[in-house]
Picture (cartoon, rainbow, N blue to C red):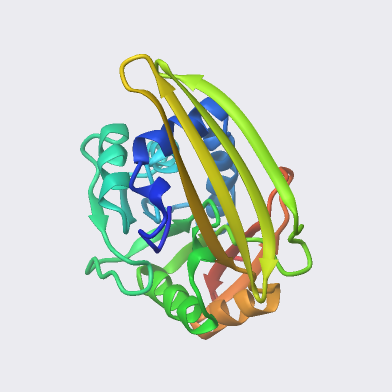
Length: 247
């Protein structure tokens, strides 16, 4: 789920998928919360586009609630895993800032803080405009942001070990603030009977846009934003609808 293929983990989509599944990320619960936000504003929503869909875990949980569903991601390796998770669904390779599908959807989603990989406010504005351009007039845009400058915790250390699919994956991360962005260094160790032990390191630089910057990007794209923190721990959700659409 990224707008950059510089990070190795997105080229190791199998490890990414198995790690988050093994750690128990609640894709089903998150998808249910997104669906409720969409249905509240567009009860008749019939089509869904999941942008930065990654390995398609949210898409898999959401697609059954729409007559049509599709996904977009920049990484071909992530899309290959998404295709296995969502057989028959249209999946497209593209950058959230400028992909063009030539059609519109009742709901457009961008989850797992993928939008945080955008490096500048100009990139953010361009991406939100592009997502809004793929909405029907009464459509709903749902974006999970990265942390705001005042909610990011510098020095955060995360550590997990999971065993799934016959292999063990450990992930240890350390995050610090670096100017107007966060910089997270992540170490992975993957062990399997057939391949032995491998280790690789990733660095994720993600912009710490503030709430007002997100809201301004939505409004510039013709959408009225609403921010909700939600019940689960996390950076929250932005929901955007066009003026005059159901609030």
